[in-house]
Length: 394
Ligand SMILES: *Cc1c(COP(=O)(O)O)cnc(C)c1O
Image (tube, rainbow, N blue to C red; front, side):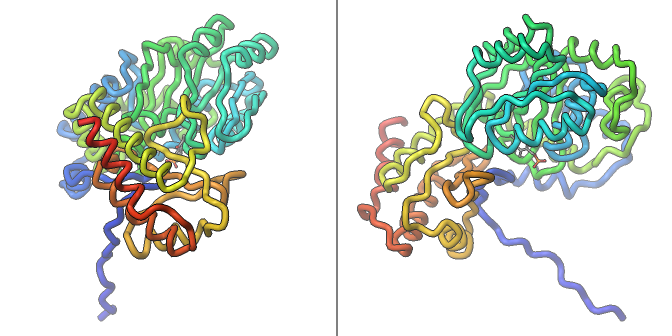
């Protein structure tokens, strides 16, 4: 007889890092629902519903809207590799880790990449994008809407006009923004957009919602070469999600159930209500963090409500605080990435995680950790400031 191998017992955390975020019971239950075949009429209906809900969440009429099998990075690859043919010029904005990843992906897809760079935490102005597209005349411009590595929001609307006037396509990373702040795919005329399930959509990681504008689809149809990735080739994947239902790869059935449920929760709440909730809890957290003596590392107009990047105070041990939060309070927050390593904490308030309960618990727990590290803050100041904010904004 083989030894009994005990069943998994994952701890129950409060996920206040850069993703994954907390998930609703309805979403988790969907993962345990009976698996059906990938061409079962029931699943085809789930796909149709998912596409329709994705269009609502992306605020688009785009026909080619679906969930790529893979995490957010697969969505990034899918957008890049379908638009780029070897030798095509692509401009990528690099002001954080994910812009850097996009430039890497583009180079591997054979693009002639021009990077525009900004220090971590800053964003690109329309003027500097205009200057580079005029000089380079790219086929595609790629930007990250919500840089999860820095906590900065890149405005896209004005830049989109500039990119289109130059005859290029705008590719946008909305992995962290979708479901938390406005993402207007049609309104801003974004051409290729990808997201992920585990940030503000609050579904476990595993799928990447994508959408392609008619302009982007025309560019895909005009390709002279095959898409470099077989798995992510939209000219084939779209036949499975479209009328033909032609087998391409087996869809991750239960992950798609979960996404369907997560999108239903987003739409039941309403996009505007959800964005207002993210904003309110962000402002309450900020009031509390400021009262504890912590400052944000991004300028106010560009701060993301779902990703609060704060400077670690002098003399405080980054790793010890995060370990204590995890071990003593079951709370995960993120450390800094790249040049921000050891310098910032990234506190996520994404999707299901964005609640007043989590804001207050984090502020109380963080105060304990700071005091244990020899930090000084007025007793209870963080919780009091957040509560004062909530009281003033009922
Ligand atoms: C999380 C994230 C990604 C990558 O998604 P994975 O699911 O980790 O593959 C890409 N871009 C941004 C902005 C992200 O926050």
